[in-house]
Image 1 (cartoon, rainbow, N blue to C red):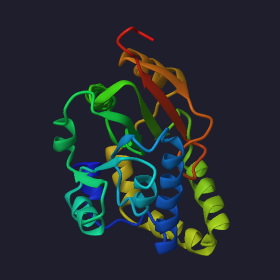
Image 2 (image 1 turned 120 degrees about the vertical axis):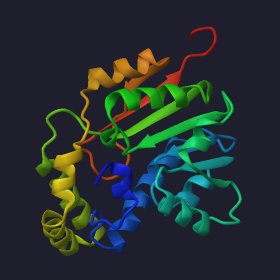
Image 3 (image 1 turned 90 degrees about the vertical axis):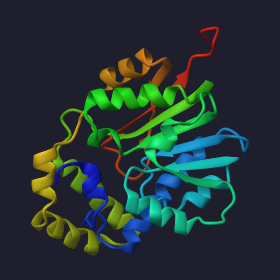
Length: 235
């Protein structure tokens, strides 16, 4: 498999059952909704995946732009949210063509690990230009240096126990171990950052940056960051 985009565009064993899938997206949507400052906010969710609970976010903002690089995912999103006011589905190219300073909040969750560092820096710089001065960029699911596979396994088992799908989670881990995922992960690799590196990256891109106390979603072994775009007066 040539890229992670190709992987996510195919059938894959990441979600152990439908309950896992639903709770995964609901938890992320609730965390994003909690970050929206007021109902007049325009939000862009970059790398949104299937976004099953996007309506929860849309109910708290003026406009929600869902962006994903996988064509099959975008097709599902368009069908799911067709006719639903306030939700728009975009390709990555359409997102990059948005007018400057039109967004209030950009979410990039569970994307950084699948992108080479120079490409991720370029993505942040591009999307920074779409944010209004004072707008916020949220980076979620950042893999820290030293993160071990067991940390993710432990997070999934805890999520399964809390969400009522622990047995399915155990079986899903076995199924994933026997699938092509390990080979693909070894072949394509995952990108890790340390806290200081990510803060410096955001500050260089024109943000006042801080690490958030809580990652978006269930996996608290991973990190999340907030960058607020400098205003014209530098404040």
